[in-house]
Amino acid sequence: MPLSPSSSAHQARAALAERLRELRLDAGITGKELAARCGWSVAKSSRIENSRTAPSDADIRAWCTACGADAQAPDLVAANRQADSAYVQWKRLQRSGLKRLQESSIPLWERTRLFRTYCSHVVPGILQTPGYATAMLGTIAHFRGTPDDVTEAVDARMRRTHVMREGDHVFALLIQESVLQYRLGNTDVMVGQMGNLLAAMSLPSVSLGVIPSTAAREQVMWPLEAFTIFDHDQVQVELLSASVTVTAPGEIELYVRAFEELRSMAVHGAEARALIVRAIDALS
Image (tube, rainbow, N blue to C red; front, side, top):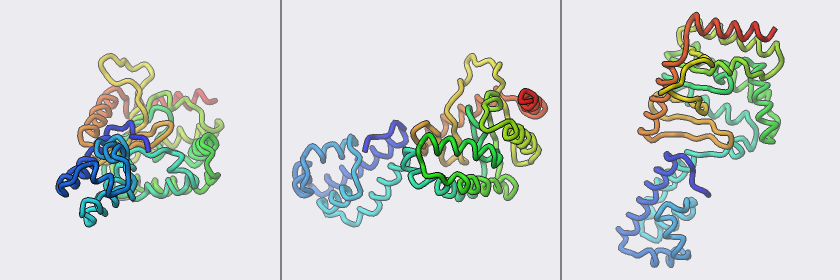
């Protein structure tokens, strides 16, 4: 498995490799001896220990057995899987369709209190109407060739929206003005989606900011990939090919800083409503 381009994944891999190295040193054996006990080449042991190759669960169990540390295997396997989840290709997440992925995120949404979301291309999922979500998820399913369960996936996404109206959740949402102009679905779908944005702005739990296309960007943030910060615990970043989960505190802070700079460029309240109304007028 190739290493992730996410530094969070790199850090997790490096930490796991260091723990495996410590087990070998505690056992008092060389890399060559460990390789012989595992039935591997010395090169494979070296690549794992130096975080150049991601070990499989079986590799970790064999390593622990070779070091007389079988009791350590379950924790190390769990750490290995956590590192694996830091960068996951969409084709792996969506191989059985889109519904399961939508449903799997509900517990995270229910336990999060502060959501900070930035979207540069589409309306944030929590604010999408069924028509808009159908158009977007349908495009994704077609592009990625996933099983067609779009109707069920949209239903699952809509069920997630209850967190806007229940509990003490707070949503700070930012979109680029261009999001209001990109058409997903027909005119009726887009008008309905714009109306839903206006309605959501009246909810006490929601703060929606729009970054005008004319906003000056000297010394502030350029348009970025879509991301959501869940409390102060993790960031989910959406790339074309994969979902990246960031958990390293330093990286989370970088996204928080980017969000605050983007928010400083956004308009809220009446000014944001005016941009949305202008987008509705442009549809007629």
